[in-house]
Length: 373
Image 1 (cartoon, rainbow, N blue to C red):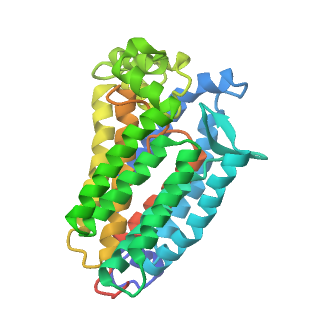
Image 2 (cartoon, rainbow, N blue to C red; image 1 turned 135 degrees about the vertical axis):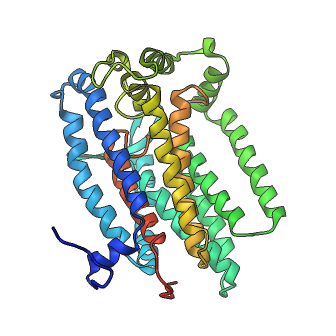
Image 3 (tube, rainbow, N blue to C red; image 1 turned 45 degrees about the vertical axis):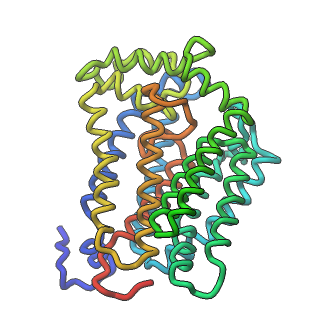
């Protein structure tokens, strides 16, 4: 066994002693839950779609290899490299989102996916972390008054990206991006008057979406009045939680997944509720909370404003996405097409999470006064 000492100056040793190993452990635990739940939830869906019953779990395991390697490699990078990666990915992601408006396949009333030979991709997943890092850099530049209109550029960039997302239309992703961007706006210490205006605009955007987008209108109406429309998936999800009780029926022993079309992705938390039970679901919630709290703890004494804003934004994005997925499954809010990070099946989601968490791990590494900017 190779021992890593603090005196060892190799790249891997330096990474090991500066990375947040607790956060790595929490992410690893979520991935283990993901393997168990995708294995439990996907066989019936795979066979219904004409695949062999291990199709989705096999793909999930294949995705994990580059996801874990990519996350590790990204976590070794400098702050400057993280910014450059974000600047490279954002325009590619934006182009991909724009292409979905022309060539995208419509799924559930929205054109979010590009279907290429042997590959399906959701470009907006990659826009999320890249925009968060670039917005943090622009907010930091504005505070430092570096001589160019960083705030104006930031507002235009945010408006352009959310405009494209709303054209798909993808209100759930637009809401997630907006909450993160306005959260960074607040943390950047900008005038409270502007923060107040931003909150009004955010709330106004939500009200406007209700009247502009029919699918948003229907989902909110069904949430407020379940008798007003089809709540099949939510009803089955609630049935799964009732069946599971405290300790669950056991991995693979659930029945609700047989009739739940999105059991392996958007509603995988319902499978956890039925087969693993309340205690395991609370452990999953705790893991998400610990990742967010651990990240904030690492940032508490950070002097670099860019690191604080980028790290906080990525943590908010990660935690809020998990909350939206779980709250939707528990019928605590209208349903949204957002995956449960590291647990739901989905190649685009997993690769985007590799990017997001690799950046976060790099930002929260100990730098021992290296002066990185």
